[in-house]
Image (tube, rainbow, N blue to C red):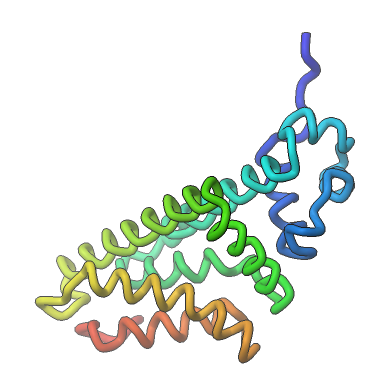
Length: 196
């Protein structure tokens, strides 16, 4: 009978993702990951196989958390839910170094087909959830009549991605506050009323 797992795969992957954001994916090793989670390197090899498979599993977990952040807001306003959700998604990033290492992970996401497939799945889901809430905002009268929801969803998504790089360059305020400011600026011309 196999021994029960004392640390779940989700907890391991969360720790590996945090490690990758702290030191960069190139410096993630089984030994470093094992020290991070309190398991042996051999146990991690048994569970995940190779470093690439470990990073891919951690990346997939990170994408799932990114997508799920859009549903964390309890706001009744659909536009507030969009802003809150995208801000929740970046709250774990608190230093430019973490953003730099996140961009290093993005290099994997853009160059390796398996990583890219996961990233594209996540990005399409994020855009769909933004569009869902924009549709709800239009129906609730928060957006001006005739707003092109599909175009605005793309603009919001582009603002989200660009804001992260802009913050890493300018390093003004926190990423969460920088993100909120830029998302609100993009939504402002389309609103019928000011955000509460």
